[in-house]
Amino acid sequence: MFNNPKRLFLLDGLGALTSAASLFFLLSNFDDFFGVSKPIVDVLAGIALLFSVYSLSCFFLVKQKWKMFLSLIAITNILYCLVTAGYLYYDYPQLTPLGLLYFIGEIGIILMLVYLELKAVIKS
Image 1: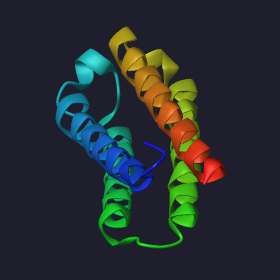
Image 2: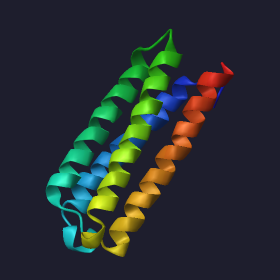
Image 3: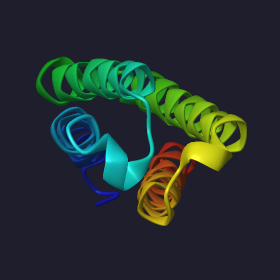
């Protein structure tokens, strides 16, 4: 993975696209099961979709100075996790156990990806 850090852009982009689709199609349509309000889901899905476009664009277009672009997505991923954690704290009473599990899982996966992204930036 570290021999070709551009693959991290692909992984990040596909992961963000999966997250956006899960939020938009799953959580937004089954809010009773997850306890998440539609406006919050729409905002988080929109952010994930923007991250996906950015990362996939970087995968296809960035030839040089990839460290700067990878660092940027790593930092924005951390910010997304903080926003999501803030939402969890703010709306905790409405969340169902399934909703809480979804967001904790999403944060965990994103933070693992951030670790790989920052490790690739530092190693190269």
